[in-house]
Amino acid sequence: MMETTLVLLKPSCVQRGLIGEIVSRFERRGLRIAGMKMMKLDEKILREHYAHLADRPFFPTLAASMMASPVVAMAVSGLDAVQVVRVMTGSTNGREAAPGTIRGDFSMSNQQNIVHASDSTSNAAIELKRFFRPDEIFNYKAGAEAFVYGADEL
Image 1 (cartoon, one colour):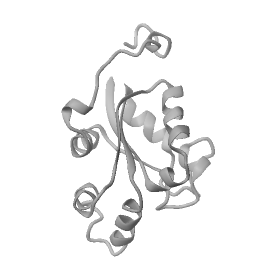
Image 2 (cartoon, rainbow, N blue to C red):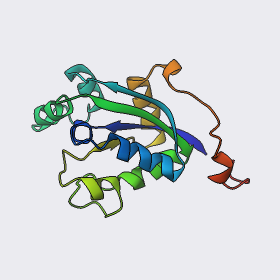
Image 3 (cartoon, one colour):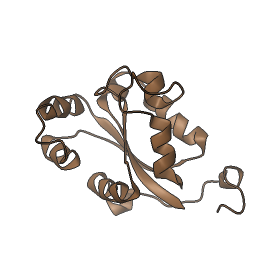
Image 4 (cartoon, helix red, strand yellow):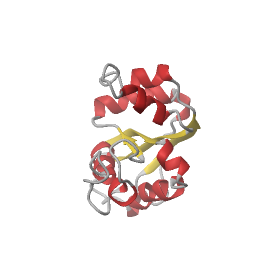
């Protein structure tokens, strides 16, 4: 099923000059960038985004790292996009992530791990609304779509 998921290119990605490399990986895979913007996060949005971690002792360190520079928020679309993006990003801890994944190739950290990706379709819907207005996500047909998916998949 066609899905759209949230990807955040974290400050560790931005500061290391990896934005183009990471975006390119998603595009080369056949996923479509449906929305993208650079933004500076504040504690309010981070407390909402990481509500499940906001009371943990490490949250201030996490928040500080996410506010260290702008992030790039992306809406990424494709068949089974949530699962495909999660597989591409790899394990949260970069030291444990498989080579060939984004974190496996570019991260040595559990926290400075390059990218955030929604973990389910329901969370993707919530997270996309948190970072994008409806008019900032575009539904368009990519010219190469017929060469990315089989005719019976569309």
